[in-house]
Length: 171
Image (cartoon, rainbow, N blue to C red):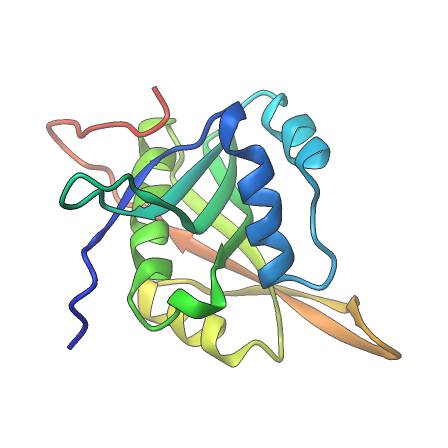
């Protein structure tokens, strides 16, 4: 059992972009730089959530441990990217980011959440399946890894309506 404090999820801002770009590079071979993230966040309906360890004993929060970038509109939402620092994996941060992304998507009026994942990313596929995602399509040879081409699975999660409202992370 980990003694690490529970990560906090908050909306990312412009001052987070450089750190998020570094995190994205830790998670993905084809990383997005800060300028690319800024362009995405400038698009209507796009927001980023960041996981960071809670501040403790007077020390500042450690950021970021994970991020999720979501586009919401037209009654649905899409996870554009989600990643957890390799050094912080296994602490349920990915699940917490999915929970927060789903809550924010529901707050934005989405009834479904979509994402694409490489078919050889077993850890991510298991996480998404446990969350309630299911296969709705394939994109052959979508990702490049060296000389290899990897198919992407398009997954969907039907989002529940939450009566009584809830706290939005995107307001």
